[in-house]
Image 1 (tube, chains in turn brown, yellow):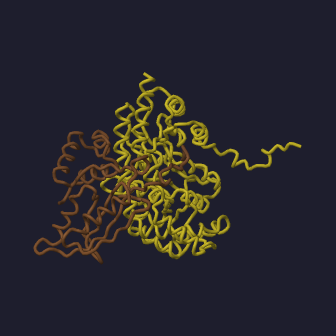
Image 2: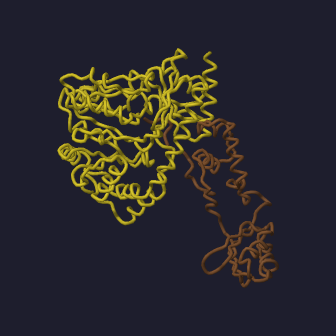
Length: 167
Length: 391
């Protein structure tokens, strides 16, 4: 799909901060608010904008800490439907955050979130590895998140180190 | 024994006008919670690939001097860049010098061309250092005032009227600091005709060349027919590549001028820092996308602030480049300095009074939009409240 400049510019703004008002977007792009509103609606309908998630650092909140694992899954593709059907069986579980089909030594990359190590392990052994056509799983627990979806979790690059007035 | 220092010090230096920005900085820096539209530099940190190369260069031990004019690899990249972006060719061997910021390029250029009493025409409002640099080189700065009614564009007639038999050079800055005004090809050609007719030199400060927002793009004075041989082109990494603190600029000019500038440079500075020059090669080779990303971001913020200022009653032309807007505050009845200092005290918003950039800047303020959209929104809210309080 080919998008107009206005559409591309709106996406660039929303990707950085989707809570910005349509008025501010309109002023930045010399568009009317009405037009911005309509354009965003169209991008949503076309599924160009898929959703507006919020990145939350749950691990800072007492009692809300989570354990995240990335699991390499090898499967035998099923006749006729290939990997898609197995992927679907996996991604339907709410504790599964993401499922990707990969090139290389394994087939599906699954990100899994749980409250404890045991919870994640149990899911892998009881649910994931028992699915037909899953040959093997390798579980990697994430020890620390440095950067997620383009956002640095900790770090001081954002501090303004400039002097208040310069020529 | 107390010394009377004045008799020991340089009269030329003493007589230089103190920067109008300095005083303002001291005031703003002493306050908490200031939203600053006073910063004349990008709000982006230098792209990581460039910073990473500087780290590598240090690790690899690039800590020695380089050739006076800079690393030949970097001069080659500058040559390629200027060819690619501005369509002019400079020989990396003998037409380009890597300097410690574009400010030093300006200093070298004035020292290389000015004889005592030579006049240099400076289009104002202008960057604060031009006039002082001309004086330090022994010349006489001659301001040409421009006004908002034609978007702060200098006309060929104005230049012609300012020329005397002592005029040596004309300094053009496009896009301009503080007005953001860009001169297009046609306007440059008209100015070039006057410069050629009177056999003058043109210094063109193009430090904001990467930050232009109009559809017809940026035209370098050096690319105008007949100007190459009489133009000193000044540019650098500070603005477009977000590398202000690195102090890396360059100057490109006819060989005879560059020879002389290199001679001055070798006695005054020797060379730009070696490890930073290596990182600058990376900047020119691999940062096109990031430069474009920053440009688009400034463009959006320009559109926002121009509308927001007009909405709160400060009329403002749409600048074609840089990251400044230069709205009029005349209807408030305050002088630029009164406006700026009362705004700072009442609402803690820092702007730069227009008269810091020359007499014709009186009645205006410079607002830099190189700050986040959230900060701009906050600044506009506070400025709107300030304007209302004056009514």
